[in-house]
Length: 139
Image (cartoon, rainbow, N blue to C red; front, side):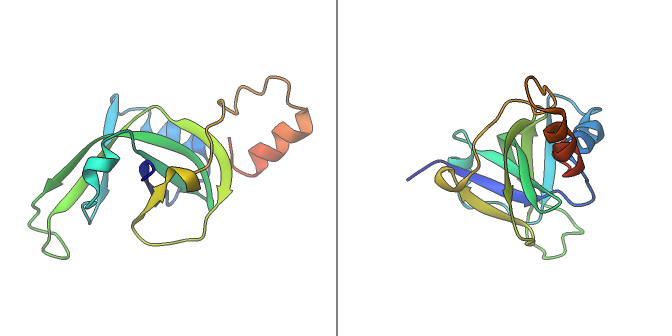
């Protein structure tokens, strides 16, 4: 079986840069809160990542470093809640459209977008392409 990852919507964020600004005050890792603990946690901890969908497009991922289930008196389901601890360093990916969904979903490596270099390092990209990427929210 291939590598297992998670995919999650990044609600209220317009771009990867905005996500990075929001998370800049956090340490080397930070928790992503979710209501369900993944049943495939061991596989996720073996090199899995959390892929972020921003404005309907996967644009980056973060490596999963820990998964923590905990009891909470205010749990809406009465079940344990979960923190998925991810690296604060984003890894940019090819843009891949994704329809809205609730919570998170598993994502196999064979279905995941490939990693790319940091798109803010435009290098040899033509200025019109840089402008189009910024307009699309990729930067």
